[in-house]
Amino acid sequence: MKKNLILSIESSCDETSAAVIENGREVLSNIIASQISTHEKYGGVVPEVASRMHIEVINKVVMEALEEAKVTLKDIDAIGVTYGPGLVGALLVGLQYAKGLAFSTKKPLIGVNHIEGHISANYIEHKDLKPPFVSLVVSGGHTFIVHVKNYGEYEVIGETRDDAAGEAYDKVARALGLGYPGGPKIDKLSKEGNPDAIKFPKANFHEDTLDFSFSGVKSSVLNYLNKNKMQNIEVNKADVAASFQKAVVDVLIENALKACKKKDVNKIAIAGGVASNSALRFKLTEVAKKNGIEVLFPSPILCTDNAAMIGSAAYFNFISNKTSSLDLNAKPNLKL
Ligand code: KG4
Ligand code: ZN
Picture (cartoon, protein in one colour):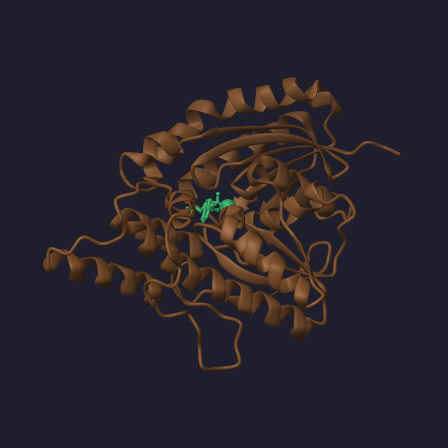
């Protein structure tokens, strides 16, 4: 079998990453330069700083990816790159670099939707995974339930109407003084707390919808913290973290299962940074099993932003002849 090698690039937020992927599922290299320690100081990603840092490291990251995969540009069949959604300045760095490479090497360019990349991380982790399945994409910028009908064929059947799940985690973590990114910190602290200690509202709509809303639970946590602060009452941070996490995770699970029933599928693939969450992994697996549904997760390194997932998505586009022209532009609000 011909080895299709994709060189992929991801720079939509605060990770500069390049990877070499074989046949869409084998990772020959996946180099990630994270800017987290820089943005930590500001409590979140500063877009202008992110763009500048991508520029500083992109060439080195791509060269390292080729070197680690023991290939040269000549061996590469196509170049995949994230062109949205994301921060426009950050996206442009990766995209311009990829376009330059595609032009100079005369290799096909494949623009990849970042969300499609997150979903595709599951193809790398689970070598036999084939559509159809339902995917729950939960990251710092997005919360979607997607019906993956076929490779590259998606129907968004639920989404957040306000904050993304990861965004709510980050904001609550900041209010608790835990720092950025908040998800892993709340996840860890929750293990010491009681999830039933405080009743935060669940993000349920009284309609037949798979949509989410996380701003209500976030505001409720912030109000709880403010009220106690004003009365000089010390809160139990672990209980707040665990109770907040329960409110978020329960509704993610509820809607993901409803989606499987609605689309009559028995497989859920979780994706995005929040897919690393231990409570989500544990509870969803347990509840889904009772409903005869299989739950798939990528390993943590494939959950957060990385170029390997972009390379996998690019491969499935490549074999369907879905290539992009060199005038491809960054689309910060690109839809799936
Ligand atoms: O997918 P990702 O790396 O970047 C985006 O595309 O947004 O996701 C980052 C998000 C952050 O909001 C971070 O707090 C959250 O994923 N996250 C977690 C966990 N690990 C990362 N949220 C909850 N629990 C975790 N263990
Ligand atoms: Zn992401």
